[in-house]
Image (cartoon, rainbow, N blue to C red; front, side, top):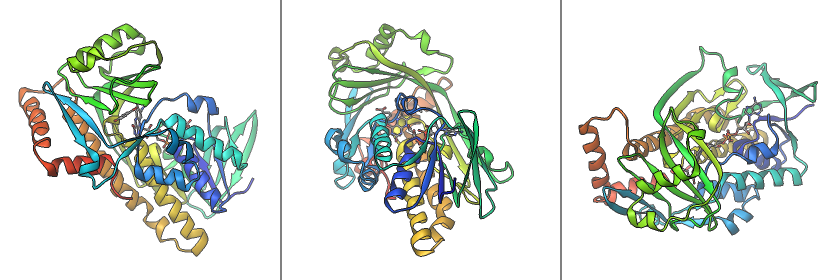
Length: 390
Ligand code: RFL
Ligand code: PHB
């Protein structure tokens, strides 16, 4: 098979790029390792910045998001016996975020690709890019026992943190930066009314907690747990009891609990791979960088990569202008590192670190006191949370 752009990975990054290119008449094939149901069963992001929402609309996939997603103009940080409100709208010059689950957004993208006859190969095994530094790269894969080959002009590595794309860049070219945090988040999804209309981030001496939601009947809660904990160690009852201990008493009193629909542990990690281009391979999203989820930046950083890549490919195919492709890595990384900084800051401010000393804990407390005493500090939080400009 021959195409212009071969996209590896059918998560939100790959699907969004595939749909945007398709609408501009740029031929592309997308290879995904798993089934659609498997991809949709992963419960991940919940908060979308407005730039991401605009891209979904441009991809003609924003209709359900605009109908069912909730606009959030702020959130709460509970700390030191207080509940402090972060007014995103006021401090970001009128911006907000949309609460709409990654599962729903991915479903909308799959539906759109399938409706327009998109070339999606699901359950593609042993995907392998070749000849990336030549003008004629190709990608091989196996499907139902048969070998296949796709000849293309560009390969997009949108295959997540564990994908094959980043690994196909030689070690002497790739530089990796990594920080592993000594804890994870245990997340529970339950068909219960959310405890609060806005998200509540909780700093507590027993560990961080987060009250989030997917809709008015679907709640998503997280608690910080040691890396040694296993999901099987946590019954639903134990989870709810620990969450209640960390919430302000007034919030705990109105928490509605129920059976978990999904329960999983995500270790917290920061990671950046540089450069994001190798020959005619371009990395995007989690394939190149990940953040701890505290600042809700992961999926949103993927969106800015896709925005830059989409416009660079448009300039190449429509105007013969390669400056966007040549600048892609530097431009994407500049924004990626700002998302890294913000996620690190939120994570450090709100979690309990097992090896912290009294001095560190005093600084954490002072950081929050300063934040809520300074309009400039709240402005900084707000502009990062709603998303820096692309
Ligand atoms: P994905 O979603 O991992 O998709 C990559 C796809 O590639 C496939 N794949 C392969 N396909 C072919 N061949 C191979 N060899 C392949 N290897 C892998 C995989 O099956 C998969 O389908 O990456 P993508 O598209 O870049 O999207 C990134 C986001 O998923 C991620 O950044 C976010 O979920 C992060 N995140 C959050 N981001 C936000 O912006 N806001 C949030 O509120 C937020 N909350 C979260 C999060 C991530 C979490 N976890 C579990 C890490 C909350 C959590 C708990
Ligand atoms: C979520 O709803 O899953 C969520 C929300 C905000 C975050 C992280 C995760 O910072």
